[in-house]
Image (cartoon, rainbow, N blue to C red; front, side, top):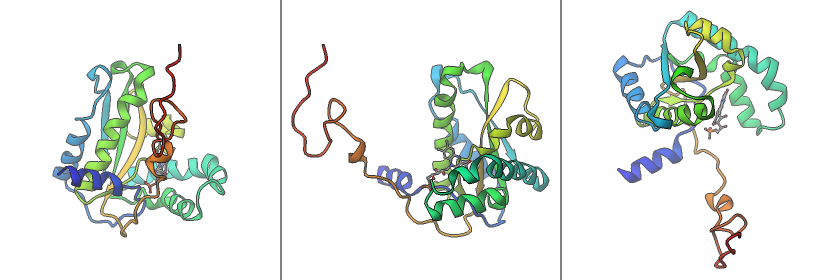
Length: 210
Ligand SMILES: Cc1cc2nc3c(=O)[nH]c(=O)nc-3n(C[C@H](O)[C@H](O)[C@H](O)COP(=O)(O)O)c2cc1C
């Protein structure tokens, strides 16, 4: 089971193209039940999830993504992302993501969370959501670009003013198998006792600062 969880963590990755095959409420329930078991500051659990299936509402959210990508992301990302990632994001934000049968809009309730711990109290739940989706054979992706037009997104899913949309996560059966995620080895960014003492090959202990 531990091996399963670790291998899931090492294979989960962003999916931006989906089959139209539906996802049942029971499956969504299992995914969100895993999400809400995440930690949050003071156990504030400041999340709200809006599950969007309606094709027109999904298309409107997709329009926000496409607009934000064209206006604020595309030119900036070209050349910064690898060609393969750029194409995947470009196609995904131009309709691929919104074509997933389900979009989950994740919102934070400011009344239940102070500003300083907003992200740190929401994204663990988002990560649980992504991993649970993968465990159930679903593709998903953490996307935040639609929040560039947060007020419009809020309006589309009826969020009151105290609730801020944080992410939009598509859920569905992946249109194709995703390869392994590309990550640098952990040892490249891991240090012993203090920064600069590499994880691999160092034995010296740096002095404690006075
Ligand atoms: C804070 C955050 C915001 C992201 N926003 C977007 C997004 O708006 N659109 C998108 O296509 N992917 C988005 N991603 C997904 C990243 O592009 C993806 O995690 C990264 O490229 C690694 O790719 P992989 O999961 O395929 O290995 C976001 C990821 C994070 C952590």
